[in-house]
Amino acid sequence: MRRSLALLIDAAPDLAAVGEAATGEDAFTLARRLVPDIVLMDIRMPGGDGIEATRRIAAEPGCAATRVLVLSMFELDEYVHTALRAGASGFLLKDARPADLLDAVRRTHAGESLFAPGILRRLVEHYLDRPGTAPVPGLGALTGRETEVLALIARGLSNDEIAAALTISIKTVKTHVGHLLAKLAARDRAQLVIAAYRTGLVVP
Image (cartoon, rainbow, N blue to C red):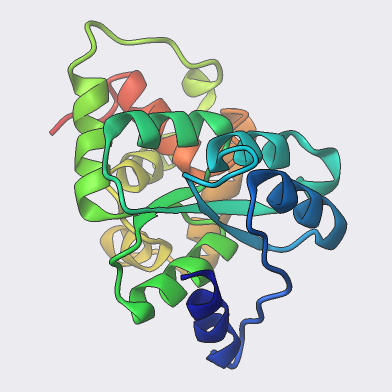
C-alpha cells in the first residue's frame, strides 16, 4: 500500500514522495529530518501508532508547516476525533479513488481540510449530540463576512466554492481564512470546523 501510494504521487507532475516510513517512530524521525509539506499517515502501524506520530509531528517546532493527512480503512469515530485532536488536517479512507487522493494532497497543502463525506457527517453528528455549546476565544472578534466564511468552511466547502457562494475572489477568501486562523488561534481548517460546531454557529 505504501509503495503504491509513493508511485501514485511520483507519477503526478506537481508532487513527489520524499520518504517512506514503516513505523510510527520512523514517520516522526523522517518528518523531522525531511520536513515534508504533507505526511500521509496510517493509523495502525508497529512501533508507535499513527495517532501518536501525528501528535509528535504537530508538536515539533521544525515541522510547523507540515500537514498530516490521515489514511485509514476505519471510519470509527474514535479514530477521527483522536486524529484531529492530535493535529491531523484531514481524514480519508484508503478506498478513496487515486484522483481523489491526489486532490486531497493538493488541497491539504493549500490549507484546506479534507474529510471523506461519511467521516465529515459523523464528525458533525458527534458535536451536535453533545449538550450545550462551548465558548471559543476570539469568536466575538470576527467580522460578519468572516463569520459567513467560517460557516461555509464548517459545511465542507472548498475555497473555490466559498468564492462562488459569496461572489468574491479566491484571494479574498484566502485572506478571510487567514484572519480566521489567526483570530481563533487555529492550526488549520479542521480546527475551524470544530470551532464552528462546538459554538453552535453551524447547525444542520
